[in-house]
Image (cartoon, rainbow, N blue to C red; front, side, top):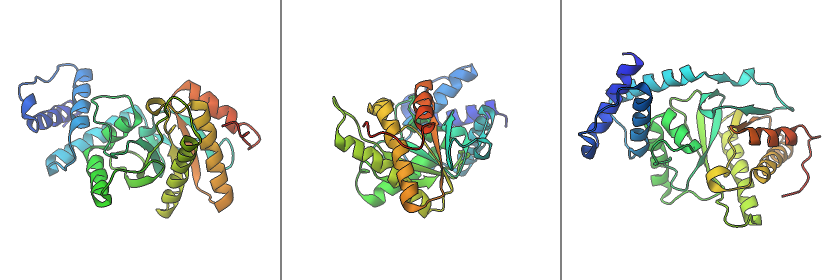
Length: 266
C-alpha cells in the first residue's frame, strides 16, 4: 500500500465505526483527506482496533512523520550543560521522552483538527495512546490532578515515552498557586522520567496558549524549576525546551543566555 491507499483504508474503517457518517464521501484531495482522517481519529473514543487497522495505521503515521522530517536529539547544540532550546514540531523529535500538555481527562483533545499540542501528539502517536491513557485513568479512578504527571509509551512517535501533565488554567489574574502548580508539573515530569530511566526529555510550553499562562512567566518558572531540580538532585538528565512560536523562542533564548540565574520576577 502507498500512503494514499493507507489513508483511504483508514478513513473507510473509521467511518464504519460511526453509523452517522455512513453516507460521507471521501474527499478527492490529499489535504482534505488528511484533515478528515485526523478529525475522525480525534473524535474516536478509547478502544483498540483490529490487527489490520493497527498495522496500516502504524505504517501510515510513521511515514507521515518521516516525511515531515525527524530531528535527532544528538543533532542539537546545548545552550548550557545538558540544556537545549529547540524550535520545531515536538512530534518529530527523537529523544527519550516528550511532554504533553494534557487536560484533566488525560484522554487527548477530542476537538477535530484542533491546533493544540495534545491533539497533535495523540494524532501522530495513534489510537493506541488514547487507549493507554484511558487505562491509566480507569486504574486511578479519578481525573488527573493539576501539577502531576503520567507516563505512557509513545507508540508511533520517534521518541520512546510521552509524559502527560495537567498545567494550571489561569483566570483573570495569575496567582501564586498557579505558579506553584506549574513548577510542580516540571518537577513531576522530571521525577517520573528518571524513575523510568529517561536520559533526555523535551518540554513543551506547558499551560501557555489555551490555558492562558503568560508566556514569559511560564518560561521563567520552567527554566528555574529545571535548574533547581538538577542542582538539588545532581541529575544528569538532558532537558530540551521545545518552542513553536518565535515569541517563546526569544523568551527562552534570553533566559538561557543569562548567567544561569533568573531574577525572581514571577
